[in-house]
Structures are given as C-alpha cells and as structure tokens.
Image 1 (cartoon, rainbow, N blue to C red):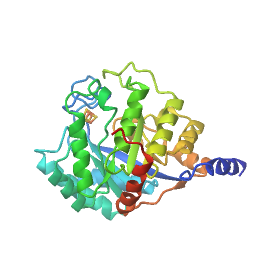
Image 2: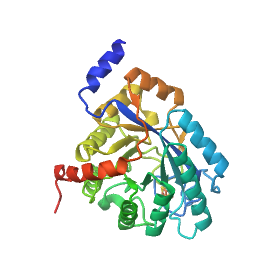
Image 3: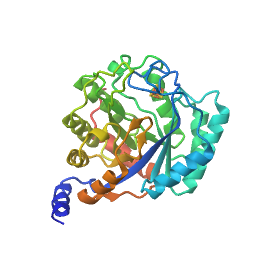
Length: 320
Ligand code: SF4
C-alpha cells in the first residue's frame, strides 16, 4: 500500500507513466543472416553459436502468440533474420497469413523482416499489420562503423514505404555500440525530424554477445539509458518509447526510473530474438509493485497519432 502510494506520487510527476504496454517479440526465422551488423549474433559472418533456421510453422507461431496474449501482451512482433524479403515470396505469403490470424486474435501485430519494397508494405497493411519495425540503430555519422552491408538511406527508404502504406512506424536504435553522445543525439534528431514521428521508438542497450565484433563493449550504465529515454520522450512526446534489449540487466528500481523518464512499453517473454529477457514472474511483480497498468491494444493508433505527431514537429528544432 505504502509502496503503491509512493510510486503513485512519483508517477504523478510524469504524464504518460502509469500505462505500460507489454509486447512480445518472437524470432520466427533465426540466424543465418547475410548482413554484418556488428552487434548481432544472427549474422552468418560471426561465430556466435546461433545456427540458421527455417521460418517457424504457423502452428508454432500461433501457439506463441496465444501464450503471449494470455501472459498480458497486447502487441506481438515477429522478427526474421533477413536482409530483405525480396525473392522470398513463399515465406512472405506465409507471414501475411500469420499477421492476419494474430490480428484476428485481437492483438496489435508488428513485423521486423529487414528491408521492404513498397508493394510488400502495402500487402502487409492489407493483411492487418499494425506496425513495422526497422531501426536506424545509430547516427548517420557512426552508422558505417557498425554496418556496411546496407546504407542509412536504404533504411530510411524502408521507413518511407511503411509510412506511405499507412502502417505505423517503429524505429529506434541501440546505445553502447561505442558511439559518442553526439551520435545518440543524431539518432534521435533523425527520428524526430522524419516527416512524421515514429509511433514507436525502441531504445536498446547493447547486450554484447561473444563472437560478434562488439563482444568486448562495456555495458551501458543505467543513467545513459535514462537520458536516452528521457530525450526520446521530450523530442517525440506522443511516441511509445520502448525499453527494449538490455532491460534484463536493470533492477526493478532502475526500470522504474526508465518509466519515470518516459518509457511506456517493455518487451516481455523469455527471449528478445536470441538474447535473454526478463523473467515473466519478475515482470508481473514489477507491474504490481510499481502500480503499472497494462495498456490495452490500440487499432487506431496510426490515425490518432498522425495528426498528433504532425503537431509535435513544431516542438522539435530542425537543423535546416
Ligand atoms: S540485425 Fe537483423 S539484419 Fe542485422 S545481422 Fe542481425 S538479423 Fe541480420
């Protein structure tokens, strides 16, 4: 009671605090990726012990979605370790079916499948996709130190296709890659000066994986994460700011500070693609102790946010 009272008082400082969305991210096609993202254990270029697998069957995906829903998730995100989906028509059509069926379960559906062409974005929209995730990862200036197999502009092009298809944009980045503070600002500046703010901004802290070029990076401090979340919240006031990878390293009080700073979504489930995630019971306990309310799914998020996000542009200073 006392702890709920004190957290309620604390949370009253922050306007978007109490409702927190639980999302589940499932790797529906793991490993064997041709890209060279330096942080990623799924790249076939690094010896991380992650083996390339085939696309998961419909039964397995639907079971996982059902389990996520029962555990309180209102958004189900499917990730595939591909550069793009061009030339993968059979797999792409299967994923369209998964999207439709999960949407019919009353959940928001998100995909992250690599780069998309315009017509693919339109097909995903028709299937009922709520959001498409494609992270910018870092600033334009630092980007080439992390990835060489696709350009920053190619990433922005995919975001444009997603936006034009009427799908919500989910795009954020990772801190702890060896970037400078300016690069963190650069990433947020790029996101906040897109023609429309992303509806969703995942903020990840690197979990360095053995075998990747970034295996020796030192862990991100909680204060760095809080600053990044708070800045994202200020420059994109209406976005869902997602406390994403790296959360497993943070204690409950540390996560509470992230929520106070403006995070209003977490990923739940045993794993985040291939890296460990927080324990289900620990997350349930955290919701109870901090007095957080699970956010219901929203199927008009895009329409509502387009006008809100447009007006938010005025709050962001453009570089010219
Ligand atoms: S981050 Fe995505 S695109 Fe990059 S190597 Fe990993 S799975 Fe491939």
